[in-house]
Length: 420
Image (cartoon, rainbow, N blue to C red; front, top):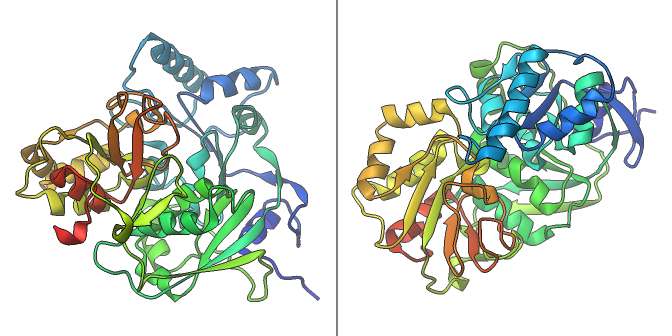
């Protein structure tokens, strides 16, 4: 009798030439994409050189300098030079730099480089983003990236799975960011440690593909190995619009085994904010006092897509950013930037008193383009609010959706967008 498997198990089994795998088992999987950025790839290159091999496939490696770019200092310029020369030497097809770049986790789906059923590893923890398309994607270290570039394979321990059942319909000013913040508030930052978050339920049809990217992106903030959505019409429409690659759909067996089941009712979900200094420290506006802020960041690999900018612009249109609040908007890619220009969103942001940056990770990791000073507070659509994440160790980062961030920029305090 055939044993049941989760969606993640089925993808991993197919990529390890096994009919069945079980949680906890160590397997070697074939890789469809290996991803790196300007911080992690130089270290991976050193590991790669020790193997004395060529890259396994020039079209299955993507390198995107996005963290400290445009180069913020000499050291970051040298890192990018190393990466640039490596990509040219090894004829890496998917190398994207200034002018063509974007934030890696927004750029790859947009370029059609990841599709359902793929296995993707990336030397960046938020590589789990691509689970929104029904792929297995996970973050790894630079050494694994170097080995992956050489062999196109990686050892992985098959994760247990948590089933997340989503029901109901999204309410006013509720987005995928609120869904994942709410879930992290339930699970905690280590509640899904080395597990697969597998999303299901009738409420999934309420979630746009951008909602799903946001949710999968932050699976790691609950400690998860990956976060994955089933492939439906919304997924297929997106993939067919962006890619010409063939793909394969996998679905969990109805009797698959899960270590836990969590239910999220969209009917009752409200705009949610994660307070310092952990993503699990979530509150809704019934429990949020008046908190003055110094900065707002809208963008990142979590919420830098065109729908995110639209949500922010809708609130900021014909309004002014509060005095003393620095508001910075980061489109996720050049295409998102251009679309925002064509739709008049950039004009709305500038007229409101915000600035718009080239696509870059920038302040999210305390890199550049918006570092916080001692005692400052920021509302951000990014994914982490650890101590010192965005600057001084005595600064504070509050995580939110683009709607909450935009409303807060106008108010000067952390603000419920439903009141705007």
